[in-house]
Length: 233
Length: 293
Ligand SMILES: Nc1ncnc2c1ncn2[C@@H]1O[C@H](COP(=O)(O)OP(=O)(O)OP(=O)(O)O)[C@@H](O)[C@H]1O
Ligand SMILES: [Mg+2]
Image (cartoon, rainbow over all chains, first blue to last red; front, side, top):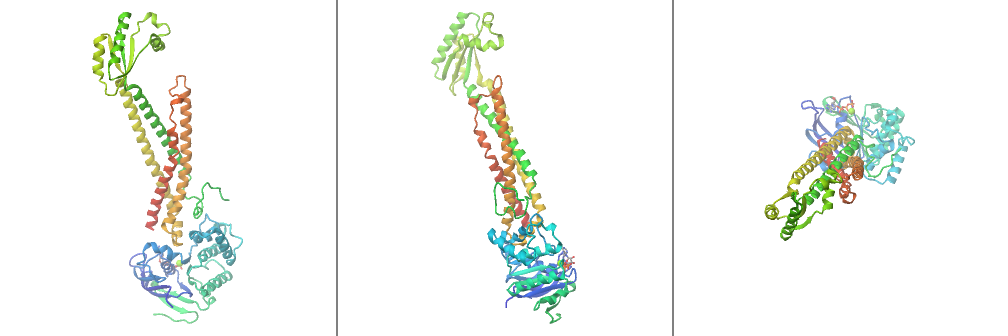
């Protein structure tokens, strides 16, 4: 199976001299579920940002959908991003828009019909268990509710890749488990899930998931299939 | 609660409320009102100058100051006869006694004639190439008491002044236009700055740069349109008020039958020009700012 995201000898630094990620080699396969863990500051968010084309390595190659992002002309980037759903660590909901309009944003960018938008958003509001909050504004919602709206917005386009940065950081174990079930079901239908998390106890909720552990100086400490621990040199 | 909107645009609610400050509309209204008034004033002054030029440029008057009425009338008649033979003279009109009395009445009162000897006056107009010097000499030969009054040369200073005023007004209009563009540019720039997070978000969600610029094009165009309609409305209303006041004066400066309303229609195009300028400014600024991301 060919990789949907491929990192080859990737080096990344915000400031020259201090590598956040160094010599990263990773292969993400379509339809798989990946957990990315590591201590705070290990570089999880930075790794995800490279996948959604917000950061570029200073050395090495990153391929997304087979495209080398270093040589890809600027004008093709929006089309690639439209195939990737992003759950930001800080949600990034638009405060002036209500829940419905926030979730509908990607579909509106795609100029979908309002009738399609209404039914699609309505369905996903049920899936995240917030059917009665459609016309509330983000600031009137709890952290966990905002987080679920951020997840809904990332999923609304049925992306090929879901990049989720701590999507369960603000919700209790019960809700987190149901979100994980949703994501894992979607991944079984072909969506690649790449999820950064602190909660190592969530890992066993997704059978068959792979676990990428980032260690010191942005090196990959291990890549493991669930419960099949295999340290990487 | 959604406010009813005059124009709809598919993307208009993508970012929520207009990120442009409401002040922009008011500033544009003020600038457009000033610009429209200056424009109306410039056109009025120019038209006045053209009118005066037409009235004065080819008009001359022969003035015969002679105490002896018989000699005066004789000189007047010969002057008229001579003028009528000259090919460069278009028309000749000797003022009658009544016309003369009417002319001096405002200065001397109704019974002036009995005490003061009035000069004889002959108005005439010449063709543009007519030689004033030659005409003056010919008249002088037959009417020694005649002097020639050339309205064209006495009006030249006034016309030059009116031209200067018109030029200055165009300068003012140009400056206001530049200032308006600057105001729009500053407003768009600060709106784009305050929306940077949203712009980055839209771009991460896969929105093209031109699409993001489109949001600001729309918002700017709408704000400028509102402002400039209000502004030109104010200008047209105050122009109409001015015209009515001037027509109603005891000695009207304007007559309602020679007012040119065309400039008022021209003002109606100002909002369109302002909107085009606003939209183009917004487009350029947003593209440049998004490019830096
Ligand atoms: N914009 C930035 N400029 C400079 N340094 C940065 C920037 N963003 C992050 N860093 C640094 O890069 C390192 C990795 O940050 P990153 O956000 O990728 O970590 P993380 O694993 O996501 O941490 P957390 O679990 O706390 O979210 C940190 O040391 C951080 O201080
Ligand atoms: Mg992080």
